Length: 108
Image (cartoon, rainbow, N blue to C red):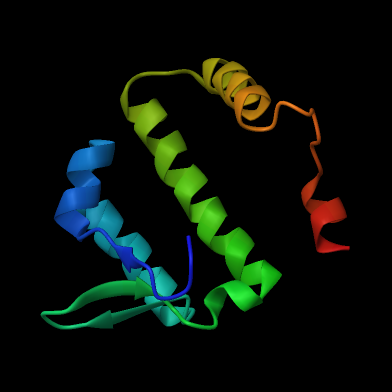
């Protein structure tokens, strides 16, 4: 994601993730309150120009994306243990070098 990048509409994202549009609207509302995204009626919703300059803001956006995926897995009937395995496998695919850091390490 880049500053100024357009986000999908609530309906588009809800269909893509197979979750309720209300869930997406709530997430977008929270991101708006934190000034991480900007919304212009009839134009669209975008990543705020200065949102990604702040590492904490970047992690908030990424964390919200992860939460949406976890919520989807739960709605599909996955158990917490199954999601842990799936998440571990996904981490290995996305970060094949094995570099994993804890939230504490990231914040330091």
